[in-house]
Length: 286
Image 1 (tube, helix red, strand yellow):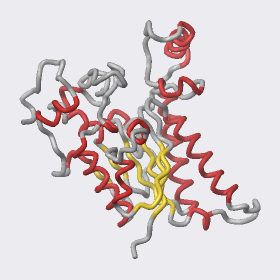
Image 2 (cartoon, helix red, strand yellow; image 1 turned 120 degrees about the vertical axis):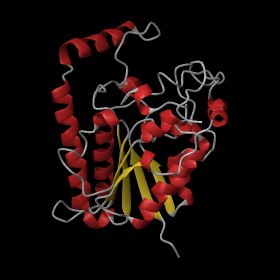
Image 3 (cartoon, one colour; image 1 turned 90 degrees about the horizontal axis):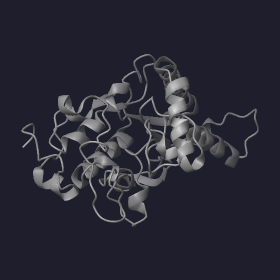
């Protein structure tokens, strides 16, 4: 009998399946990994949040497992994490690290918007003008990466890293991981709209650009309606791929998703999610 594994996820919208779980749907890949030898999925990913937000959720989860084990401080907590797997999605390092609870999902917003409260617009301007520094944000994000890798290694947690934005390739460059690193997820997402990488630019948030749509009253016009920014076929493919990694548990494995001949791109598939307000597909992918 195959052992059912316990998987916990942290990250941003590329791992957040909460909108589809509310409809009792398992089309988003974090939910669909149930079909690939996974017994329990605990998902703390939240759309629009920062690396620091995911890190604090990760720290809280680690401590909660230790607390539930009722271990004294003198005992090694590693046995409590036996057979536990973490999937950590690494979002853009530039996102605002700390926000009030009702604004944590807006860490990616960098400009004024008339739909937001004036005090929040002012806070964004203050952050950009006085506090944001690229070198500092990269330093913090790199060391969060380092801490997560070391914590998982120390506690015996099997870790799967998903680097969601290619502009943030500093992840793993300065501190190489002993665990698998998956890259190129945003490229798969953008290619579904028929665009080549040079057309959307490294790190461009595709949900702001190629997927500005309004697909019914429950969706906001500036949000991507695809589960985790992927069509249904590619969500199923991603779930199968992650399921295989969970089963085999390779180490030092770097997987660039666009290099794999697994993905589904079609104009008909794209039309399912968008009326294509930007004038139709490019000639890049047919």
